[in-house]
Picture 1 (cartoon, one colour):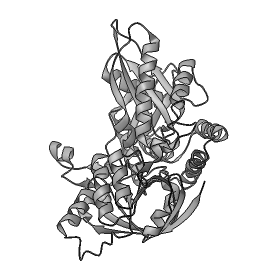
Picture 2 (cartoon, rainbow over the protein chains, first blue to last red):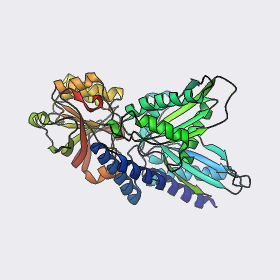
Picture 3 (tube, rainbow over the protein chains, first blue to last red):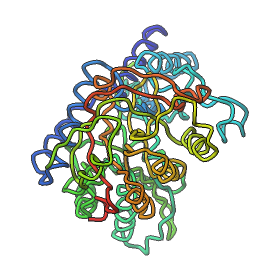
Picture 4 (cartoon, chains in turn red, purple):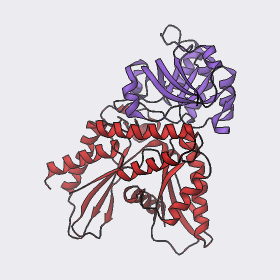
Length: 284
Length: 171
């Protein structure tokens, strides 16, 4: 694909990610609405689904916190990625942020001015730098796929990456995840969540697996462990927006990577909000 | 589920009639602010400099949101600077704080003391856009999307989450 084609495809993919519920997410909401017994929670679920339809129709943001772009590149063995292609991908991200439009929330200034936000905000939505790009080797030889996931601020406040002493029991790790998630979902305020979780050997690896969980997870395909985590967090009765009810969590997307010969596992748990994962992809 | 309609300025009688769990539709002029600007508004109420600015807090609503081309939507009201603004702004006349997330018990008590309530609004930016009729910057324009804004809104949907010393999160 030529540079202009990449820019255009990535721009549209970013707008889709920020404005559109995936088909499996729509089905997850429909199941939740049918099962919800709390009247207020059911109304909020219906409103969130209606918001999804309106945003998709208008191709405008699902949420005013339109998110920080996170890019995953899936590359098969017959494909190559050039610097020119990366340049086009970043250009497409910037154009997508301008057209959607994304929230202009790039913080300007020197290192410490950006920390205390004293350097002001850039009015250009396209000035928002994407997070460092993640490369994933695909076993589909001819695949070159660009995934974009938009990360909001609320789940970043409530998310956690930390070590767990597993005591040679997988159940210990699951129990810890349920404990973290129950506390996080209660504080988030934008439930129902989709819990996106990575378990790896370092903080970097666990966080990158959490990002892969965002782009590869599916509400219609849930493992036994994912179902267990979802069920146990839902038993807390936190509910939609914390208003109680049956639906604190829609699903759990879990990625377990290689593990170290050690008594420690590193877990990254993000209580992705009612709109996340905001994900779409395009094939180049 | 009881459904009520509120129009700003909200009266003490309106507040007295609200119960935790009520669904409300809010109309009229409301203010918007979050982390960056709410502490500044609090200071203005404390040093008296808010007089003469045209900002009318009595009977007012503060929506914890940024206002940007991406739209509006609640940020977490339990963020440090936002939650710390709820008691002093209630004392200064704000009757309804609109946001999301559980508040600490001290804040819930302060709301009751100053005859104010807290409501959660679904984060439905695409729908809220259609219910927002006007928007303008009222103070601190240098804060950009975090400036103190006012909106003219029609039927913003919300659920009363704290009132009269009670919180829906404690039930």
